[in-house]
Length: 195
Image (cartoon, rainbow, N blue to C red; front, top):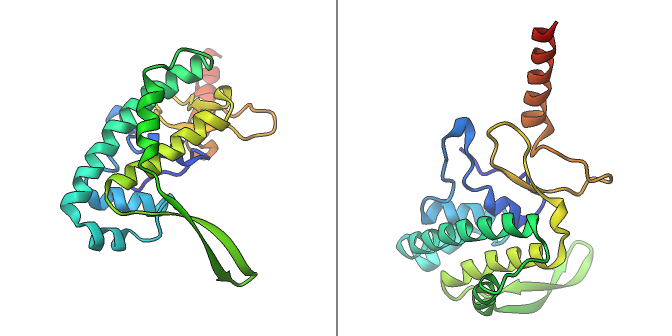
């Protein structure tokens, strides 16, 4: 199964790396290769192949295992944060801040088709720095977004998260084409049976 990027925010997309279609969890970052590919697809790193050559698959396997642990921790925390945005997060903040300390950023001027641009880049000296990249996305989500707009899909059996950026903030489903359509079909069938 390919990674799903329906969350509207890299942190939500990271939470969605363990979807449960048909009630069965499917691990999308099960090893270092899949983890590096997800980071590239999410736009957090330039090239998965470069990561694999630089760090090796064994080190990336370890980073993927750490990322899975962080995902479960973040999912529990974001669920509680969604339900109580002003709650007590004394246990979570030190852990997140320790992870953020590993992030190393630098700036570089690059030439583009539009001219020169200043770009912020992440220094990746070890596989642990990949965990810091994801921690930065989680920090951005909880630090800058409205907790009420971080939602779980209302689709039956769907476990996906998304950031509701719609104008009226009425989005209910991870995807109107998938879960939204299934809900409409189920409602139609229910009305037909009621008649």
